[in-house]
Image (tube, rainbow, N blue to C red; front, side, top):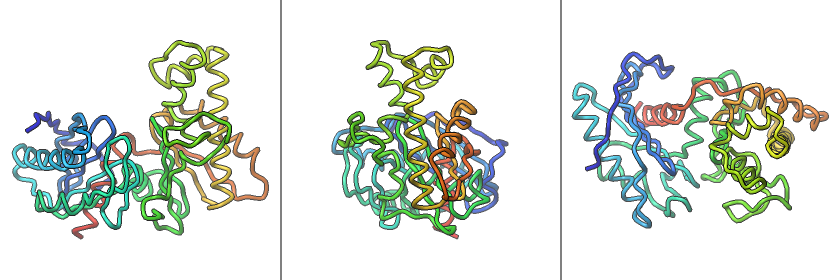
Length: 320
C-alpha cells in the first residue's frame, strides 16, 4: 500500500455546503489529488501523491490507489462515513457511461472505471473528466454561477473547457469541450495530439515554455517566467505571449459565434496572470466580434481544488 500523507483541512471555508459525506479523487498526468468531504462540506485529509503510471496497467493501478485512499480515509477519519466516490481523470471521458474512452498520456482506452471501482471498493462511484468537474464546480458554486450559457476554460499544461448550454452541461459523450484542440493556425506548431496549429500548442502554459525554449535555446522555469520576461521587454517572450493572446482571442470569438455564451470563465495556472491576461484578451476578443453577443471574460473563483469540489458534487448527486 502506498504511504499517503493526509492533511486535515478542518475549518477551511469551502462553498460545498451540507450534504452526504463523499470522497473525491482527481487523477492527473503527474499527481493524484484526493480529499474526504464530511456532511458539512469540510474538506478533510487533502492529499497529493504521484499518479501510479504503469504502462498498460495504469488504469488498474489508479483504481487500486482509490481503494488505498478509501481505506486510509477510514483509518484517519473513522467518524466520517462516505456514501460515494467522485473519480476524475483526463483524456476523453464518457461521463454517462463511466468509461475512460482514451488517455494517450496514461495509456488506457475504453476502461469501465465506474464499474471497476464500484466492484473493488463497494461504494457508488461517478466517473468524469477532470476539467468538466472543475467547470461544474464553477458553474454551481463559483464565477459561472450567474450564467446559464457559459464556457469554463482551464488553461494549464494543456487547455480544455466545460460547456453549459441553457443551464445544462454539454458533454458530447466525452468529446465536447476539447477547446485546446481546436485549430487556430493550420500552419502552426505540431500538437501532441498529432494535429497542427491547435490552440493548446500555442497558448497553454506548456506551450509558452516550449516555444520560448525552441526560439532562444534557454529553458524558463515555467510560464510565469515567460510572462515576466515579456513584461521586462524580452523580444522572444513578448512575441510568444502575443501569439498566445491572439490564439485565445480567436478561439473565444469562435465560441461566441457558435455557442453565444454569456460568459467565458478562465481558470488554471495561466489565469493567475491577472490583468496581464484578461485586459489584452478582452481587447482582442472585442476587436474580432461584430454583431455577436460579447461574452464577459472573467477569472475563475474557486481555485486549485475546483476539480475536487466538482467530483464531490457529482458524488453527492449520485446518492441524493
